[in-house]
Figure 1 (cartoon, rainbow, N blue to C red):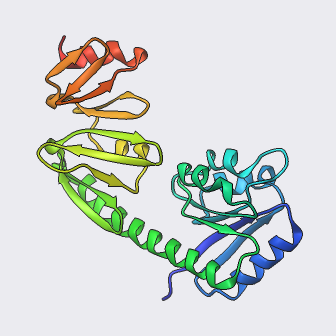
Figure 2 (figure 1 turned 30 degrees about the vertical axis):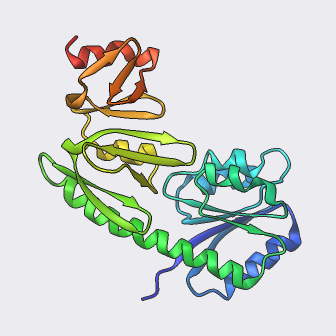
Figure 3 (figure 1 turned 90 degrees about the vertical axis):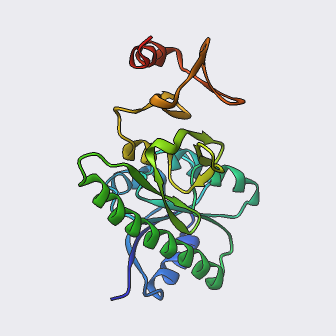
Length: 241
């Protein structure tokens, strides 16, 4: 059976909404579960987490698309649909899957749907592998999404994880850093809390691998990982200092 993605359309322009509804209707891999003229009207449906993809305009009154994107659950992805190309960088910083310029052609629309299907397939495969790991009493590895692959890595090889601009990067001993498609929160949920700790809003560290602490930062080779003031006491306690 063909995989169907549940989608929502949010756009304050009636013609734009109707065009997207037409495209969705003739795309067999999509199922429309909501169509709204404002982000405020769509909040409840989006927060339910039932949508895989949200086709979202950026320039809207009251609550614009960029601000609204911060409310979207991690299990949903955004495809921005806008008449302005100067929002592309901001779009990808909020983990947008794609960015379509109006007027949207059906061929460009289908390319975005293809990317969404690849993302969903990867997520499903990742969830299956992740569930098997959580069934184990003491998992020794985790599996993360890297580009179009699933990469399994040993927990004791991970020094720290950093959220940097629009990417999350996993730093490992003796290996090249790996940029992941996952969010920092998604990776944090996979890591065992007895050995890993969020020491800063952008950093998670592997406590057993911490060797040097210098003032309010952890030293990994030539890299300094900051420790938030509100995390310092807990971190030092767990470090045994």
